[in-house]
Image (tube, rainbow, N blue to C red; front, side):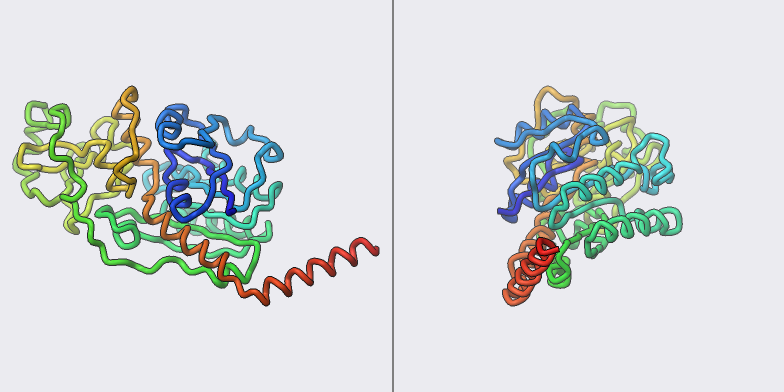
Length: 337
């Protein structure tokens, strides 16, 4: 069994990808109590523990093999404050809690996810500290920026950095990030046919600013507070946490019935979530948009998880045997001394 813990779990996007690849979740944590309603609605066992990760005692966590964490990206993102580890809200320092848990529990490996800009933040110093910290803890690292439209078979441009680490160098050498795939899913494949009128702008004040600018029916536009941005790649612009708050980064389409924003359920599909994933009916759309924008593209995660599993299971048997002999002899020497 390949056991995982799901940190900064949100609504379970990373968990979904790993469980589809054959991993088993033994613990899940997030600070957002609204995420719990969505998370627990979709997972039968191992419900979301709503707790401040900085106060979670690593020794109290169940034993696990792999740590999963899409740690908060605001402190490192272009759109954020760019404070990194010095972020006044404490978000940048949350990586140190990942390091703390890795140090105590010593799992076999991990997957971390963050915004593409993490590599460039503070002229690369932030990323350097993260990698050096992980290496000091005994992990061998590989990382790569993947775009969901190229690796997740979804029509959304979403560039994220993925950091994979293993204690075992042979497994690390064996691991390869997934190859690009040909995208077959189109925008129209993910749209609902019957949408509640509340999502349409036809009778709302904003309509005058959108009318005449949103004309194509195979394009997802983005309302940027004072202007409309057209995506020219026939994919959805990056879904963000604030797309349901105050009219910023709102994904908008023309579905021939009128001009409207994407529904939360449609946004889920653009993130690769399965059709049977459920959203609570008693949570405001603004919170659902935030949860989805903060989430991950589950199909990209699944592709990475499958490659991790392949690297783990395909480790040469002679290497396993040699390591076992070495570890046994080392133990004997320790006892003799």
